[in-house]
Image 1 (cartoon, helix red, strand yellow):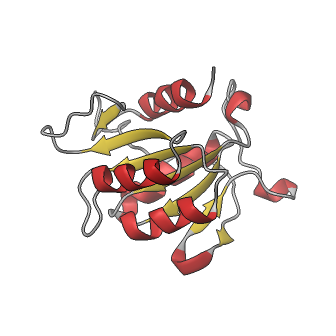
Image 2 (cartoon, rainbow, N blue to C red):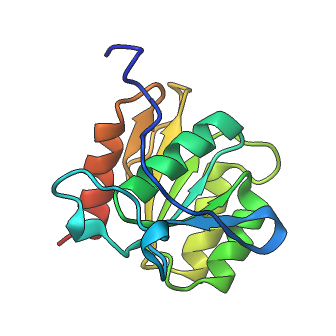
Length: 159
């Protein structure tokens, strides 16, 4: 995998919307300025809701921007505790993309608690550690191509 394409920034236009406790949402909104420029074939994901959680600000920003570029409505959090609150507040969130190792409530603990609240929630793990293995959910190893995230999101959200 070429380092230049792994977790690279997407170019699109989206207007961030302020949320509670530093949580932001991005993606499809009421006006044309809030709609991202989408690559072909992303209409099936448009309007679906995802929560992205990562404690590394640059990784979080790249993942959030990429998901928004696919037309997803994106909620974001920098660790597990605020992410869990977002899941409680927003039952419309369909998929959780979370880092594995984070301070405080880590990814696996977040997923365990989130699934108690929302058993239908889909999960995608992202990690730079080779020691994490999930038999229930896909795991993307950092660095990964953003197309791998696209594939995992489509598998989680589309029949």
